[in-house]
Length: 154
Image (cartoon, rainbow, N blue to C red; front, side, top):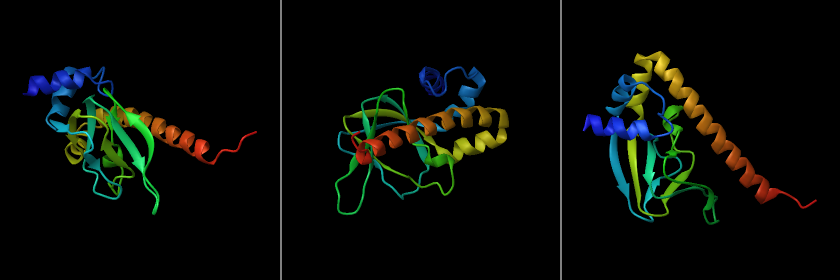
């Protein structure tokens, strides 16, 4: 099992280039999951105790406003990371996530990984840089959606 999880990590862009020992260290925090089309993966405000690396299928990141239908901000697919709220207090989801198709993913326990990063600060810093890039890209995507929504024609 450990060898299989390490191979999955090695194939993931977020973990690419890490040393074998680091991948083995991280792999103890992961397990494989499956979601069916239409399943809610997480909801805004719920505890964010994990993240996912998608291995197949697509997931919609959505935002809801009272009295309005959900608005999709982004669609994620194979190789992408779903969820970063596990990394920042108060560890609650900031959006909703829904499986748009059947989804195969590797889930990672956020507390386990934060503890491992505390135990190995160099690895923790490396992962923080990688997740900071993901957060930045997602915020840019949300910004573009807002410009679309509230933009005015010239």
